[in-house]
Length: 328
Ligand code: SD4
Image 1: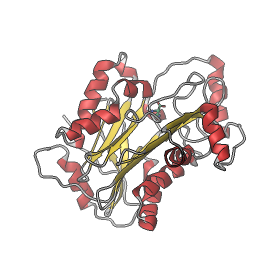
Image 2: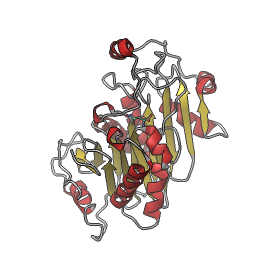
Image 3: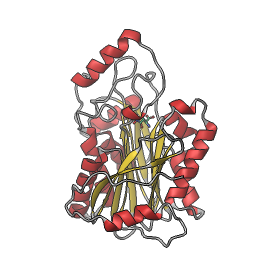
């Protein structure tokens, strides 16, 4: 029932042959096969994951830190002007204000998150500062902004990007709010990475749902929902309608299923089944999960077709189609 994963795009990182990475993907469909995972590895949601993975990979080679890598990778997406779901160029809430959510986590349990934060270009770095420089895990709203100022983060002008302004102006004509995510406007980036020594880290950053209520926070900055990392087991991240992911504690669920012996692929599929069971109007809800275990085996699954992810290994950086519960 799994859709066969398709190799879509060729390496950004160099080499043309993708045998180790592809072997890992094929093994997901037959969990009884012996592990064919690979390390190091960087995994991230959607096609903007390709340039993000490339930056993460370069950082990993430069500093040797998987935490540095997952921060650097998603900073790329936070600056991507084409992306209307991440960073200050993202679509605003219904008041016309762009507010950002982000989280970062290491396999030893340390983590930091920010939510409902304004004027900060790199919320992922602010989340890292929360993790490293405060006794807390999460700062939100004005408190997060004040902390950013105190930490020397520049405050950006509150002005919508030209693309976001155009879309917002169109939306205002009807001001119709439907908390529905179609595949086309899923752009959050969730990234998980495993270094050669088996250490894990993850990051997730988003402007959240377009035209959300002012103050709405999604799954991305909620540890256990949008991101969870445990060096003993593996890591998972999520994209899609945050409310549906929070309801099932999606990323934590996947890591716990892997702890109980499921493969990353089996764990992602079970999380999607759970999400489908716990959410009404499932035909209007897209959500997708990515997972890696500490052996470097990967898994991915979504509610509806269309979810893809970028996978970087020593053999290259490729875009891969994930399977889905419902078919088109
Ligand atoms: C949220 N999960 O805020 C995010 C949205 C998302 O691509 O993934 N957008 O609910």
